[in-house]
Image (cartoon, rainbow, N blue to C red):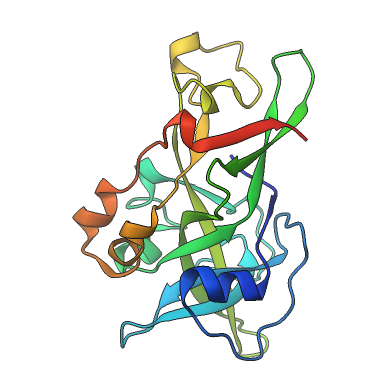
Length: 215
């Protein structure tokens, strides 16, 4: 599960995603859960839109934007049935999350050593996500929010090495997790394609696509 990453700046997003931005708030250089960060979705007209929202999806039934559970990551295997995420999945509220890099914990030494992951080609990541616009009952205003999708990474030569091992599980059933990378050729398919086409894009990225090592 990813709980911290570094997003590109506005200029980089405008250039790489061919998108314009107006009066976009400045976001922190490094993002942690519940902070505000950028994500990209499509307008009903089909154009891409840059949005800033809370990292940690707020479902429609929430009474407050502060939730008792973590919603910064969503398991791709259960997004269609999870009470928190199924509404966004059902209505095609898919987004791309720009990331210059993201961090994951490595416990191979017996203690947590953070590793940083960049693309080997130097481009920013486009991570698969879901979004929602939640109406605050206290203020009647809408709050944008988003989550990153994850996929099982057991057996992956790189991502399978991350996260603390569960001593109660065998090595082949650790359920290590990885973010889902969407390649540029598939951006529009993820943002506005049919559900089955989007589902087919949820897969692991080859190890050679990563540049990774201790922070």
